[in-house]
Image (spheres, rainbow, N blue to C red):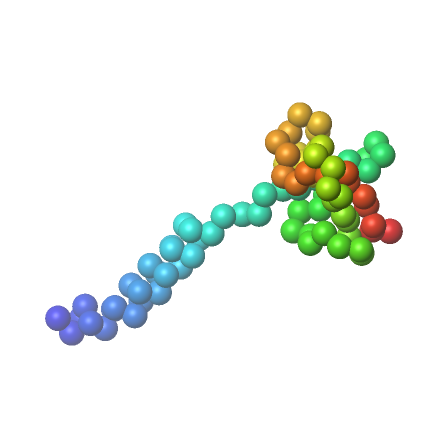
Length: 82
């Protein structure tokens, strides 16, 4: 019984590490079309120094750099990055 009790912290650590990876989803890729260029905005927060989407009902950002990819955010994409 003492052998098992000594290994409980290791077992708990391994289980916690497994749970952290198993239940964490990667961010959805996000691209906005600026003119004829696709801009990767994955992980960025919309704002005056990054990009903005207005209230228009069309596609602002998509999951992939093509016009048939699923829409992530709606609006008109405005690139504010240099």
